[in-house]
Length: 402
Image (cartoon, rainbow, N blue to C red; front, side):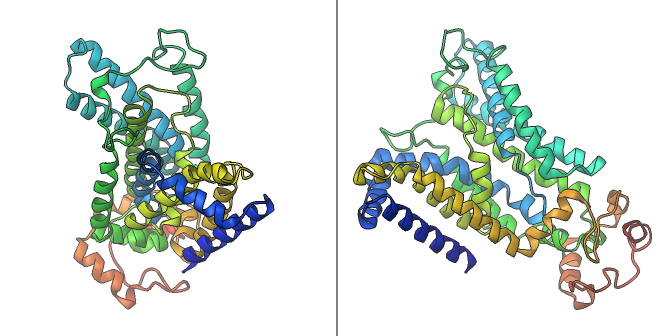
């Protein structure tokens, strides 16, 4: 309901901007639609823009559901792209450019996922060890990744050719992802989004997803059922970092065919907005990603159709969209709880233990957890006692949380 209201506000603002620019809103809307669907190439551009955003957003679902509010996907994409480029060029050197395409794809994807995941584990470790704010650490690490990319493109991955902008040499042709739509830049990496939607739809119905959701709202209750803060931080950040790293690989192997300084291109921040806009639901995120990409691709068609509206209107609309996303985030209790998970600071009657791994051995099975979560005596009311009955964690852990 709220998401629909946000979209309605965006449409109203877009209409107002078109009128202020002296154009007919209907002509502008027609140009927007034609800009997205007038040719196979435009459709391909729509998919090329939506794919990385969707993949980043979908793999953020566990972290956001757990209340781990990371804004570091930009840096994780960058590091994933660097490691994927290095691995692909390394395979070429080892095999004399005789490696088959599948080998390049597997090595590139795994290297990208590993790079993004390892880079995401750093803020998780800082949060678990010293309670460093995840939002702050991931934001600052984006600058570290950008600086490392700049240094990389001037040193060990620099192109041997003289170029105006720093870039790597072109990747082997065999490492490029095949086109999905001939004559466009749409590549088969788009299929990974479909796979991700299926996998995370399955995960969303699993006991682990329920544990993560309860952890965001009632950390003490979740701890008694075996989900610790450290485990949640590491696990969710690992997934989101691996997803961002794979996006980094897709950008170099499917779009640019080399490593560029603009490899992330704001995809990480857009992914966060799309994840919230899609309601943290895989299918909803996929639709929201297409909508987000359509704004960018369609704005060019709108400019051509009206002659007075600049394509930068898409940036204004996205700004309004981000504002709406902030409203959505503030209205969701699970995301409000993210402040606690990201910072580890107490809030209300629940808290996070300084070393909550101490009670990790008290993990019950999933059925026991489901029963406890649905048991009224287990309590989910804000002011109730989070420890309804004595248990393995009620001694050390409860004492630590107070």
